[in-house]
Length: 248
Image (cartoon, rainbow, N blue to C red):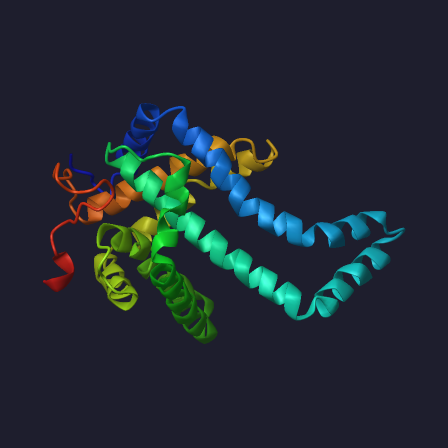
């Protein structure tokens, strides 16, 4: 099946079709993913938020917030770091789940969210490298930082498709893959803004549907970029390697 990366309606239509094939499981996994990615932050900040709500004035609430940042110390910093690492790996697992769903493969179940923990250092390394590169580009100006984030946007998908590829090679491959497609991908992301605003009015409940819709659409976009037309039967699900376009 050919995916045209420039045809947004087609990408979204096929995303909805792919979601129906794995419904309702994809929504259950979406709920678990949302809980896993929001609960750690809630737990860490709950004591401070509780004290802020008990404050008798806005000034006192702001003072509590500022003091919590200053008094958190090493333990809080370590907890935040661990939380960010956990969120990174769960998000990579969610990308694997939606990539498999986009290709009509069995995406697995909740355990897919933790699949990338088996390559802990590999996915952590690539995230650190991307964050550093984007930070340095942003130091020059905001626009170069945005361009860099668009250039690196396909890195995780590439790593999922090519388990033996190094983090740096995956970043380079993403840059090559996104040549001439950055604005196209930027507009694709903008097309979900209306849904995101609507989701905020439902206290996030719409995110249970919107999150898989976005990620399966993004996976379809990647499939189009690498000319993915189907996975060989002997390949493990989610690891069907497209042609080695990065070596051209």
